[in-house]
Length: 98
Image (cartoon, rainbow, N blue to C red; front, side, top):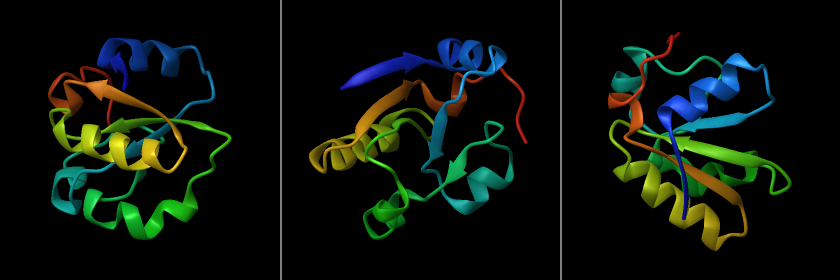
């Protein structure tokens, strides 16, 4: 599984590169703040909402610490998606949130 640090993701955002971030945390966790532009799909609903993602795009998966996003990566990878896990999750995130 490909991984990227929170600092690397933040650097991509600062360069205004088109990136796709999916936050798989629960509703109450996201309410406390998420990475700007991230799409919220709770891990428990990912299998049911997988059709919302485009196999031609690359997605960076985010959760609180990296565990749930790792499971999300395994699921999506098994369906042919191009996925990167943000190591350390939001605990490692020092950038702005919305």
